[in-house]
Length: 392
Image (cartoon, rainbow, N blue to C red; front, side, top):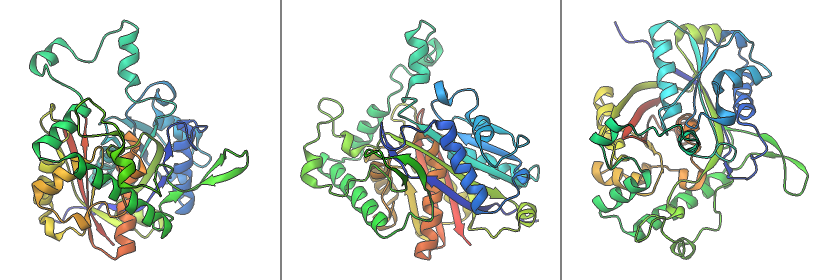
C-alpha cells in the first residue's frame, strides 16, 4: 500500500518588515491573523473545514505569549472559534516543524485540512527576550547545571557561525560576496514580480502619513555594493561575519495550507505541490549551524533522490557561512541555491521562516517550471529540519 499523499494547497507570507520598520505598528497576533485570513479567502475555504492551526514562534513572550496560534485564530475575521491552534518552538525551524506536524496529521488521517504557519515580530518581541527576562528578574537561566556540565561552551549562534566560516576556510571577501549576491537576487526577483503571488499585501501608515499597502520586502538593499559591505565592522572583534553577511532581524508571518486526498475533496481544491519527504535531526550543539548538511543527506535518502535530482534549494541564510559551507560540503550547484535571494536580503523572522521559505520555494518551482525543491535550515541547539517538495 502506497503512503498517503500530503498536498500543499497554497502558501503565503507577509513581505518582511525591518526592525522598527513598516510593520512595526502591527501586533503579532493580528499580523498572523491577517495571513491566515488571506489563505482562507484566496482559496475560498469553508473555514470550519480547518482541523487545526499549528504555528511556529520562537520568542513566546509578551505579545507572542499565551499560545499565539490560538490567539491568531481568535483575532481572525474568517476563522470560527471551533478552529483550534497550537504553538511550536523548534527555534529557527519552528514553522518548518509546524509544517511537518501538519503533514503527519493529514497523512495519518486523523485530520484532513491543517494550516501550518509561523509568526515573529522582532520589533515588538526582541530576540532572546524569553530567556533574558527571567534571568534579569532572578528567576534563573535555561542553562541547567547538568546541561553546562555536558556542554560548557554552549550556546552561541554567532560563535557557531564563525566556527563554520573557519572550518570551511571561508574568508571575509567570500562571505561578503555571498551577501551581495543575496541582495542582487532578491532585488532582481522583486523587480520581476517573482514574489507577488506569495505575498499578502498589508495595510500600513507610511512615513509620510498616507495609507498604503506593504508588499515589498523592506530589507532588500537595491543599491548594495561590495564597497558598502566591506565597510561594515565584524560582529565580534577579529571575526569574519558582519551584520551585512548575517540574516536581517525581521517582522513577518506566513502560512501553508496542507491537506490529504479527503481534504482536497472537501475543499474542492487543486494543490500546488506535494510534500515528498521530511525529516528532523540533532547534531553538534556547539558549532550548532552545521546540521543542514547531514539533514540534507538524510532527507535525500528517505526520498530516494540524489542532490543532482533537486532543481532548487532553499538553505536559510542565517549567516553567509551556513549556505556556503552547505554548498562546499555537498558539492552542490550554487546556481540552484536561493535563486531569489535569502534571509540576508529578505529577512529571517525566526519562527515564521520555515513556512515563509516554503511559500518562496513552491512559488519558484512553478515560476521556473521545475519539479523538485529542497528546504533546510539551521536551528539553535544544533538541529535541522529538511523537506523535499514536488511541484504538481
